Amino acid sequence: MKILVLNGPNINMLGIREPEIYGSLTYDDLVSMITKHCENKGIEVQCLQSNHEGTLVDYIQQAYFDKVNGIVINPAAYTHTSVALLDALKAVSIPTVEVHISKVDERESFRQLSYVSYYASRTIIGKGFEGYLEAIDFLADGGN
Ligand code: DQA
Image (cartoon, rainbow, N blue to C red):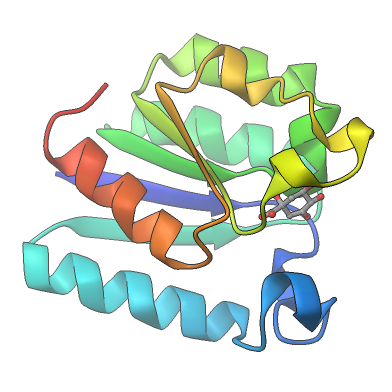
């Protein structure tokens, strides 16, 4: 079982950016938490982050050639704008869960549309870092 955890723009700023919304833990803390969780479950995991839409598309395409079994993606702001990320996910046809750290459903109206949701099997919102672990478990348990 091989999982790619992909994070979009400004997720590298966790711990610094709007701690009242995203908390005080850092991106490195997130990666350690995911790595430990996957080690315990015998899941091979790769965590990648980019601030650039095209790079995120490249990572999704590469997942196909790397025979990744599941993608956990927090597209961050590109959630609400990117048809390119949606198309990349549809192109590789890998089971995908969308994660948002914050309660996007209770925030600004421009955050209410998610293009990635048109493809993702599940969307987990407002559960903080735990949401990523729940997404990994869902994919590892054969959810698609
Ligand atoms: C986010 C929510 C997005 O609206 C925002 O642009 C982000 C993070 C979240 O994890 O809650 O950067 O995806």
